[in-house]
Image (cartoon, rainbow, N blue to C red; front, side, top):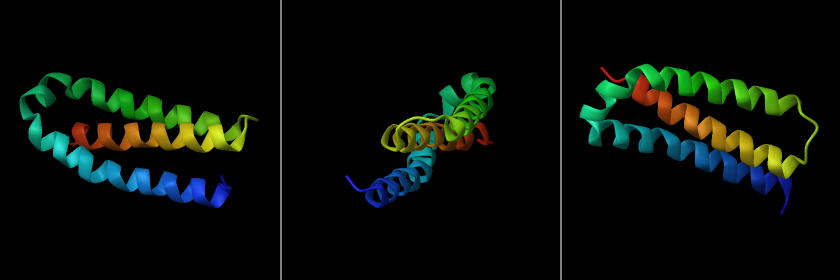
Length: 84
């Protein structure tokens, strides 16, 4: 698979993180109160892990997939963390 296609698929996946995070936030309000202290930590760990992966010398396909997954987790967790 072409690297350009992989980047496009990764961006499409990340674009889905925002509406999914909002949907989860609205559907699970009572669970958000109990887990709010963990969502910030999850977001930071995912962002830090994605940053580390940028500098590792691994296959580009694995790198793109892993970074997209970690950023997806970070976005969804951040939306949940910012719940009022």
